[in-house]
Image 1: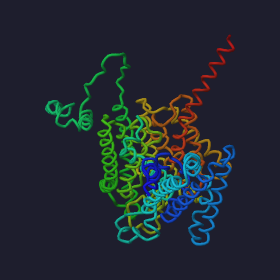
Image 2: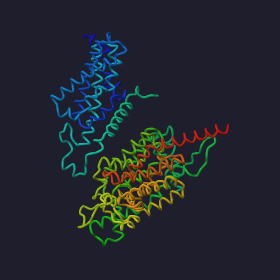
Image 3: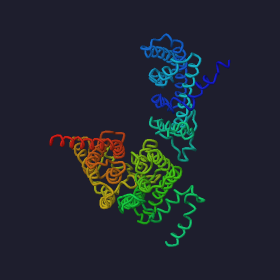
Image 4: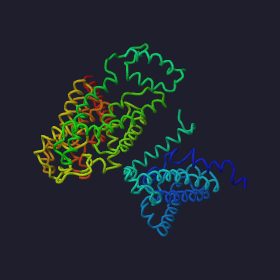
Length: 211
Length: 379
């Protein structure tokens, strides 16, 4: 048991949530972070899908790592990821059709998500399946965390709702002169919120500041 | 005056390094510079000596903006009484109403913007720059009179933080902060910055009163050419400072006379706009003649006060022609060809702000290769 949660394994899981976050520190996976964060629900589904796919792709590649010829490893990785993405996409279509329509191509585009290829190349090819699983889980959740923060602000101030539930659209608030911010719904604002998160993180973590 | 100077000298040590309020020395420095010419001089080395510094430049622009501001205040009141159908309002009443509408916007813009400037200078240990004095005056002038004040505050904060401070403060920004403030409201709260209702400060319009601006009429193809003189003088609805071409031209003369703005940029914006307006008019796509394009909407204001901003415009002399011409042309193209945006000046200037460094780069490298060729051929 202590073996399973050794210091190294714990770090593989915890680091991507904060200090080595794939979105805010490595700046990977930005395109989907901009595209699906206008509302919370698709952002969460997207985050979970990526988490599941990274975690299991990491495990599979880690199991195969000694048998994959290094010249064709990218192809093998792509095949594994594509299989998992197709599975997730089919499951979403079957059980959460509305959201899969909302996410449209972005579920399919997880295949090209830089976080995935990065983790497979950098971690799963060198480490055992359990450590790879934790690493994939950590990176997926780190990605999901940022998506959810961005989506929270965008949905709250852009549409005045959270999870589609009305928060700010009441007559008394509108009477007071409040209006939903149309810019929040557009992609540029996602970039600016993301920038603010990076700004905040760097201001608080001395080790992230370049000198 | 003497007493004030003495007082400042007395409290100065407390704000210097090691003093009781050393933390607030940026703020203190800003107020001292505001009240008196600073007596700090350069130590050693050769420096260019010139009477024109940032403070004087900014003051010149403020003075140039004053005619547009005063006319804007009057016109806000005039349009209001016109809209409610009261033709008997006296000059005093009109100005009074205009002041009630316009002054709060100016105050909000300055308070919010300067507060952020002071705080960020304080955090970074910089001096507070005079740069915001101009932006803070232009922001109210490009707003409609009815804009809610909290929107002005948010837009100002957004533009000062994300367009100026993030890039390193005065002189480092890529885009014109005042225009970004307007663009922010334009995309975030589109119903509050354009349309038929936002120019008058009137809940109830008089019967038969049309609230549309000349540009909206032009987009609908119903602009009346008899309106030209009004549009030139400024008796039309529009953003506070943009309506009167006469007031803006007075500002332009001041800017050119003091050498703050470049005549090359200014002239080429008008040339670009006129040419494009002429083409569209000749091809029948726009019902406005070329000179009507130049006098209605924010074209003149943008050309004189925004495009010439020395920080965000092209800095090479050839670049200024290209930059200005493309702004003018682009503004008319957006006006005529994009039905969603009746006014294109803001977007055209922001777009060309983005491209100004590229234009400079091309001009400089072309110059280098030209000179290289000359060296080769003479060999």
